[in-house]
Image (tube, rainbow, N blue to C red):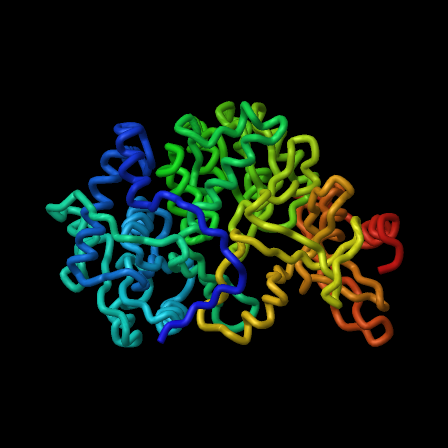
Length: 493
């Protein structure tokens, strides 16, 4: 028996389901672009017709509410259709990182008892092994026509393009996002049918921020680009932003910094959200100056601590863009906060009514303003818990609060600053040192291109800091200069 526990109170509100949103988007936006892949444009009317035919085919195959269907694909239009078809039926989407191996896919499939999978034959393992090793798996659907499997595109040719109301409730489970762990199998974060709406709604909320009202619009005038994987919790924003607000998306099969800027220019992309390593990759492009990049109005970096220096350098590449620093995670529907243009060192204030954030110390007590501690969260943007992991859920949920594992602090105005991960805390002679702070200082050095800091055991001090740096091309710098630079900023660590 499958058991999913909700460890927080979800305030229910009447919200249109995905099926109804697809219908209304087709009526309102019609032939306007919803998604662009290669040189092909998929409009809202086509989206409705083909997604509903797909959904009816899944019903004919015996899928019903609560059945788990994995999506194991690179970014592609089929990924979008799969999400919308699954959500239109009340099934559970299990988006799986395309870089995971066949054995990892089998482990996940057995863990959540997959009933179906939408995938591709263009992989390094035999798909037949999935059915051999996952007893619950009934159907393998591929985006290519192959006699061994069910053809995805033939399912979109079903004669019925009208889909009946499936009676989906917002407290029903909608998704399992398997997040990669530092050891062992990834753990599955469960979302309900309210959660899939919240990210797009929260992004829309930031339009009201001072300095962003005429820049960040999140409507039919916006065009973004899928730099991050659609399997990511932030990937849902592309799908829901389209059917809720008419936003269009250029689909990138996989991230490439050069392809990113080419597509921004070609399709007039107005806004993007990416994680810090992607911004770094764009910064180090040699050919970036060849492109105008005038269409981009805003860029949101989120998902990990980011250097304000990085954000300011990135802003110089895009003459008309405002750079925003945001925060969120799979377990707290992203983006849950975003900075104002005047303070990109912080990640701003959390969206009111959706989540409450506090900073706790190691004794589960709230710390004073300005003090660093672990960020804890409560509210409807917090996920439902890890699938079939009761011990882990008891560990991360305490007294109604979800312990995020991220370190942060609040300033006097209520702005949140992300310091790093609690596991990245280095205890040197009893004093806490944060790896992210050291890395930020190193990245400000004019000769340093990349930097990472870790803690290593030390008999005298418990731990000491060890830094790894990559110098900019053509630079030769003695180690002692970096050591002196760090001592000037931190003293002896």
